[in-house]
Length: 174
Image (cartoon, rainbow, N blue to C red; front, side, top):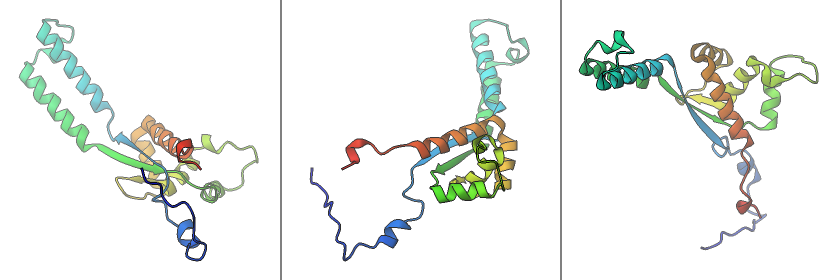
């Protein structure tokens, strides 16, 4: 395998271009969230009813009383609703000055303040480091997303944490 030239020509190297490369080069993680996470529970109930109907069990009489074809139709309708209610969130790691901006946006806090336990801190971080279906959101919009998706919000924070803690493999270091 050919080796790349690892020397830098000081005369032609443009440090400003290299340093201000935007955010495209930052590590990224993607997570899928659902506006109505309860739909998946409904699909599970229907699948259980279908299984019970097929094996002759009547544990779920209210759902199982309907025919298998009707259950399949209901299941497909729910799957369609799940698909329509999902959204992709892509997050990338912030750099230290951006993290400082997020903290400063919250005002004066004690030196030992745990920002990571403050929801408003995460709304600030995500306003800078996340895209919901490719769209940037304000901190207030992230609060609204959090209110809508509830506990799924933790998966967005986890994705951000993973993006910011990923290290370059030693095989790429020189």
